[in-house]
Image (cartoon, rainbow, N blue to C red; front, side, top):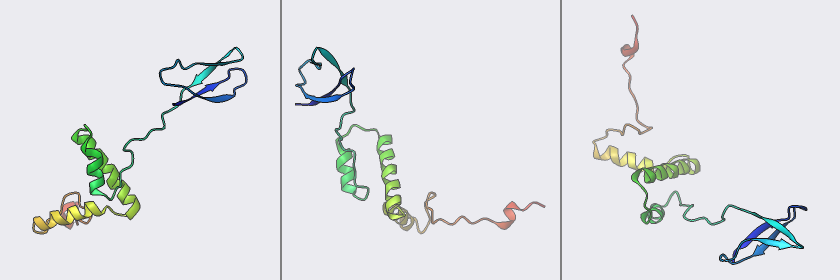
Length: 126
C-alpha cells in the first residue's frame, strides 16, 4: 500500500498515512481535516545507462518508441559523459580512426586531430 503525506493546517505537523489506491485520499484527526501533500514520484525507470557499454545503450533503447533524433541526443549525452570521465571519448576516437583507415588517411570533418592547413598568402592584404 502506498504512503500518502498529510499536513495539519493548524500545527504544520506532517503525518504519513498508509492508504489503498482505491480509497478516497483524505485524513482527519480530532475533527480537523488534514491537507494532502502531493509529492514527486520516487520511481526511476531506465535513467542510468553505462556510458562505456555498447550493449547497455542497445538494451535500454531497443524497446523504446523513440525517434532517431531522440537516440542521437542520448548518444551525444553519453559521449559528453565519456569525455568528462576519461578526458576523451574512446568510442568517437575509434570511429574517427576507422573512418580515416577506410578513406586512405582522409580525416573526418569533425575529427579534432585533423590539421587545417592555411596558405599564408590566402589572408594577406596588399
